[in-house]
Every structure is written in C-alpha cells, then in structure tokens.
Length: 84
Image (tube, rainbow, N blue to C red):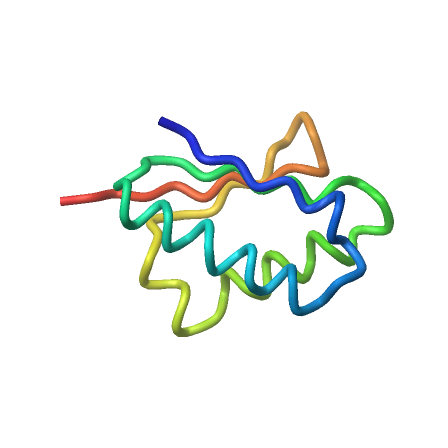
C-alpha cells in the first residue's frame, strides 16, 4: 500500500501544506503504510524544500525510516517507513 499526497492544489497556502503533511504522516502510521509519495511539483523548488524541511524536523524524523528524492522526477519525494 502506498499513500499519495499531491500538493499542487495548495502550493501557496502555508497552513494547509503543514496540515496535509501532518495528516499523511498520521495516516501512514495508522495504516502502517510502507511508503508515502509526496508530490510538491517541479516549479521553483521552494515547495520541495519546504517538504524536506518538514521531514527533517526533530518531531517528524523519528516517524519514518528514510526519504528518497526521485532521480527520474524532480517533483516527487518518497518517504519510506519500517514498521515492527
């Protein structure tokens, strides 16, 4: 099972982006999903940087195993989980 979060529609709404990221992380934890695909889009790269900063926060980082930046598609980030 893979969860997907597309940020195209809310790219310029800071609070909504934060809520959506928290929600998808909570959903991944609840469903024990092994993978979350976050699509910030290509654009200027600012939204992707914001997503990566969110994932690097001290309160978020322990929730997942690793982050993978898609080498084929700059506008996509994969968050991998390892559940026990």
